[in-house]
Length: 383
Ligand code: PMP
Ligand code: GLU
Image (cartoon, rainbow, N blue to C red; front, side):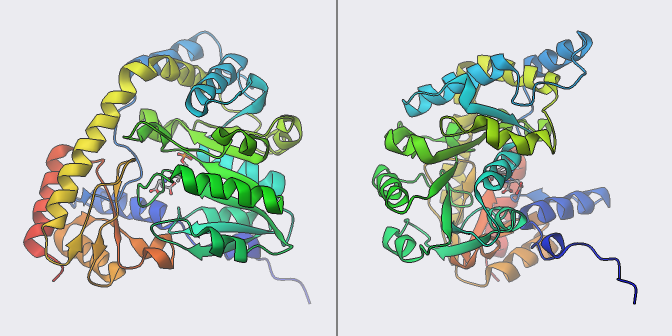
């Protein structure tokens, strides 16, 4: 008997990305003429600064249309190392940086580098929808650990088995916007050290932290030796469509880890990297304004949501998300608001069981659209 053609179980069994699917749903509804007020997007909604676009245009015109170096353009890698060193306070060199097509690919590159078939990776939840599937793509097993408001280090340690190789830690957290505390980070580093685990630290929202401090495992000094840092231009500079991010690796691992790049995407287009270099140059000029805008919107929206019966909402310390608790089934409520109010949100349970009873709302649409969405929510309530 001839074998049937089929797609691989590895891909067929992946759970679809709830955030990407919601974005596609909103796109399709809009294309069909419906006006949707979206509080669902993971895109910051900031137009890329024209000077960044100019830099890419200039690079293309100057002939930067060929393969770029696999690890990234040296000037961009050096600028990213300096940026990370300024933020974390520990030494980063150009050689520690691999430029990737977005943070998602940086995450996959790190996981490809450390996960063997059957290995386990600890993933606290609620957490971003792609962590589990990326671990599965590498043949590993995500160990999902529900812990909503604080990392429960004892529960994490209890979940460690001989097969555990890594943990994925995200701060500020998507979907809650929470910044993980210094105490929790210190505990994680000790735990990883005790059990010889890698830490994959996803800090793609770290430029949108409102407070003065941003604790990170690499910043503890000790954690630097076993932490992979995932970062991106997407959220910071409104550059989601450019597909530009990076992975900062523990010292000495750049070459072996980058083999995955060599055999997959090869490189990030040079002109996109030129844009990234310009973005970093403009950082001090443009980013504080974006951060202040999100903080203002989060504060205003949280107060208006909190005033609705059955909703409890406080503004978090970072990002552009809100994660209000709702006294009803979150999936049914999100579906109802989309169908009846034309307001899009993401149900909290899409981020794991610990997110149930919440919605993820982003304040990335225009002020007018956010205002209208909140007006509709207040008028309809949870009914
Ligand atoms: N990590 C988190 C927590 C995210 O929310 C996103 C958003 N897509 C990413 C990583 C990856 O972003 P990108 O690939 O656009 O850099
Ligand atoms: N990270 C964003 C979100 O959580 C964008 C979509 C995605 O890549 O998941 O909505």
